[in-house]
Structure formats: C-alpha cells, structure tokens
Amino acid sequence: MGHTYAKVKIYSADLSCLEEVELLVDTGSMYTWIDQRVLEKLGVKVRRLWRFRTIDGRLLERKIGDATLECLEEQAPTMVVFAEDEDGRVLGVHALEGLRLEVDPSTGGLKKSEASLAL
Image (cartoon, helix red, strand yellow):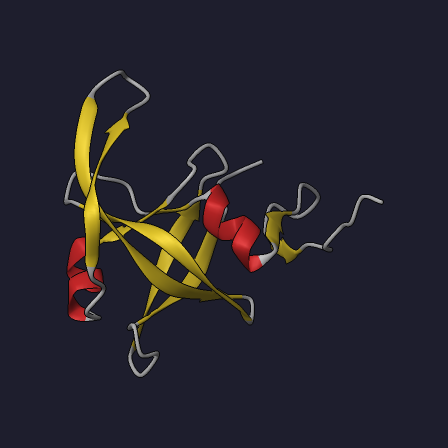
C-alpha cells in the first residue's frame, strides 16, 4: 500500500477564514503538523511550547495550538503543531479520531469510521 494524502481545511478561530492544504496521513504520528505560516496567517494562537522526540532520537521543541480541521465533510477541533521548514506536514491520529476518519486498507484512502459503543 502506498502513501495516503488528504485535502484538509484549516479554519481560523472564528471560522471566518480557511486554508486548504494536502497532508500526508500518518498513523504513526499522534499529532497533526501544519506549516507554521499557514497557522499564523489564520491567527491560530500559540498555546505553549512542547518537546517532541523524532524517530531518529532527536529532541525538537515546537509551538502547539488549537485549530478546527475539516476533511471528508467532517469537522472537529484538534491540537496542531506549528511545523517548521524541515518538518513533515502530516495528519495525525488525534485529528483522525476526532474527525471520525480512518485509513481504508482496501483502497488506501480515507473513509468515515463508525462510532462504536461498548456496553
């Protein structure tokens, strides 16, 4: 199976402005990394600085904030990382679950997932 990409809309805090970007769907990444210039243009506020350990063991510090994302007509608020030039741009698991989306192994694309309730 190849890489899965998704067209994602990112909204300003008041939902009046948006930018559409294409992100690599990365089920190995907890969080969504979006170009910091896009987030700044939309007025996404920096909440704090977090540390992230890369797959090769490096420690990075990046700003995080909150944004509303939309994909496949599903919309949800989520935490986003302000990606710097050398960082990947990815749609992570936290946002996927909030949007109720999953990778369909038969097509390699995204699909809406069913909500389940364990009784």
